[in-house]
Image (cartoon, rainbow, N blue to C red; front, top):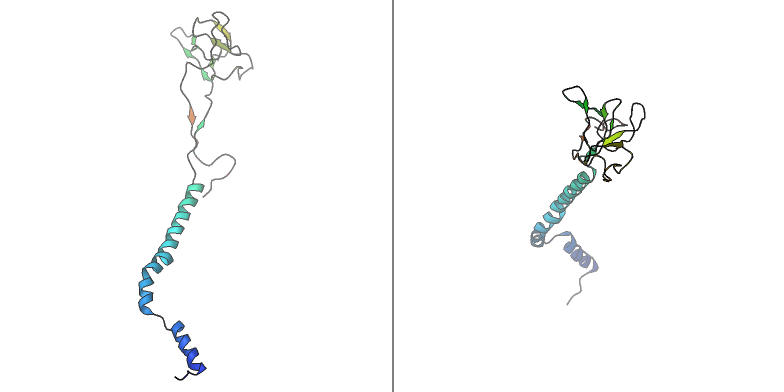
Length: 159
């Protein structure tokens, strides 16, 4: 048996590397499509969805304190003050439940007891006549939600 010359041995080895086995490559084609094309596209879609989820502006609800309102008047023109809500009798204004001072002149607000209709200062949590302890505004369960339109305060709108 003759030994091939070294040059023929090198060419034989190079032909195995340079000339592909087409049947083997065709069998690998589905895997190449899945891992080479679909996987990067799905990865980019997942990253884009995650980025959108992290940076998307979400609705924010801010519960605003109600503004002082003028008191309702009865048929005789006298103000009607609801029970358990602070009010200023001098200015005829009904205030939000957390207020204890008038915003016009700084005077103490009054509150009518829902049990026996006695009037006391808004800063006092216990009725002096009947001894009932209660929280201001407990009778009113409505909430005021203020929605702002436009850009956030303190800056321009982001395009």
